Image (cartoon, rainbow, N blue to C red; front, side, top):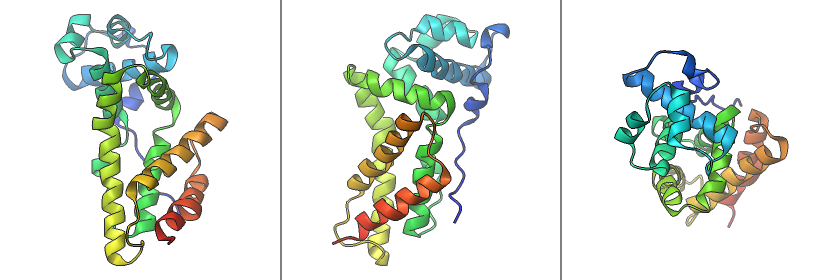
Amino acid sequence: MDVPEGTIHDVAADVGCDHRRFPRRRGEVLARAISAAVIEELAERGYNALTFEGVAARAGTGKSTLYRRWADKPSMVVDCLTDALPSLERHELVGDMRKDLLTVMSSYAVGCTGPLGVALRAICGGASGCVELKRLWKERAADPAIELLRRIVVDAIERGEAREGADAYECLIAGPAMIGQLYMANDTAPTRDEVTRMVDNVLIPMLKAR
C-alpha cells in the first residue's frame, strides 16, 4: 500500500529564493517570504545566530514589520515553522488504524525534507537552551500531534483494532524518534517504504501487544 503523500505549506516553494532581489511585499506574499526567510536562516545559521535583522533582510522587508508581528524570536520561529509544516488539522482520518498512522507518520517524514528539515533540527538544539521556545513548540506542535494520535488510538480501541489501555504517547515517542534517527543517520527524510515498515513492524504491534 502506498503511503499517503504529505504536502508542505506553499511557503516551501519560496525557500531558496533570494528575496532581497524583490520589492517590498505585503499581505500573504510577505508572510510567505518571512516564513521562507526564517527557515533558510535557521538552516544556514542555527537558532542561536538567527536575528530579526537577518530575517528581515532575507525576506525583503523592514525589521519593524517583524516586531509588529512578533514580540520575540521564539514566537516568530515557532509561528513560521508550524505554518510551513504539513497541517495536522487537515488530515482526514479514515477510521482505519494502519491507514491513519501511515498518514500521520508520512507527514512527519515530509517535515524532514529540504531546508525545513534542517531548520527543525536546528530548533531541536535551540529548544534545550530556551524555555520559551520549548514551551511554544510543545503548545503549537507537540501537543496537537499528541491529540491527533490520541484520537487515532481511542477510535482504534473502540473498533477493536488496538488493545485496551494502548498509549498514544508511546506511539508519538516511538514514531517521530525513528523518523528522526533515520534522518540524522542518512541526512535525508525516510522513504515511503521505511515509513510503512515503521508502522507495520513497530507501531501497530505496540498498540496491539498485551
